[in-house]
Amino acid sequence: MRKFIVAGNWKMNTTVPQGVELAKAVAEKSKSLPANVKLIVAPPFTHLVSVALELKGSDVALSAQNCADKEKGAYTGEVAADMLASAGCTYTILGHSERRQYYGETDAKLVEKVKLALANALDVILCVGENLKEREDGKHFEVVTEQIKNVLYNFTEEDMAHVVIAYEPVWAIGTGKTATAEQAEEIHACIRGVIEQKFGKKVAEDTTILYGGSCKPSNAKELFAQPDIDGGLIGGAALKADDFIAIAQSF
Ligand code: PEP
Image (tube, rainbow, N blue to C red; front, top):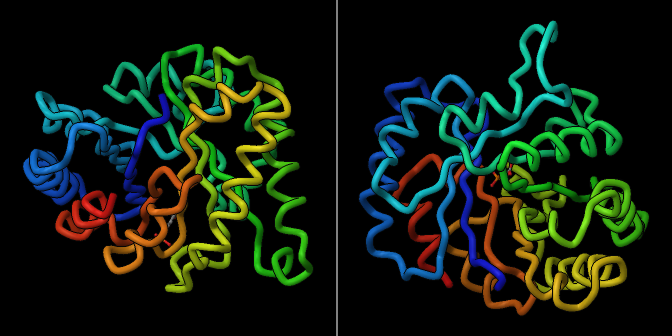
């Protein structure tokens, strides 16, 4: 069954005490949500253990923002998938456009990361999306299709039960520009079609596809009303518990 998800990507924001406070507020306010809406928070690595303790007993899941493409060893500064699982994560975001843009994350590296995440019982939120130039050149369907094929076509139907896709047009991230509900829906439908081509209709129907890019309480309702948009990956608005919960109440 497809899940409805609202995931908060805190990026490089908050100190540990601020993050714990935010998690506490999210957990408390999440009690008002319908049972079919899943909340996930993705704090920085340094916060994970403390936030996991704060979330204990709530239905809010914990995600990392990235994981290493290696299992363990001499990779200074990296954090491995099994470390994330042992810290209390059940998800990790992978392939965020900021990682692709600033840290040279390639689709080939992402294949390794997804393998390690799944092998360590972490569900993956895989981000895809075109930049402004690609959108202006009319290449958005092509770019997103290639990103999905390059990474997910290396996995199995069973693996796909542990993968969530987040479509995030790069030009809409942190810019205040949101894709219109129609622009987002046509790409989401295309992504579902690309999943169907390889894994069949049932897997495609069961795959959760999130929208991300300046999603906020005022536009979430229209976006989430689209048949192929199953929730959101939220950046800026996830840093305020009230806004984050208001977005989740938009289903
Ligand atoms: C994001 O970075 O995943 C994101 C969607 O950011 P924002 O909501 O701030 O555009």
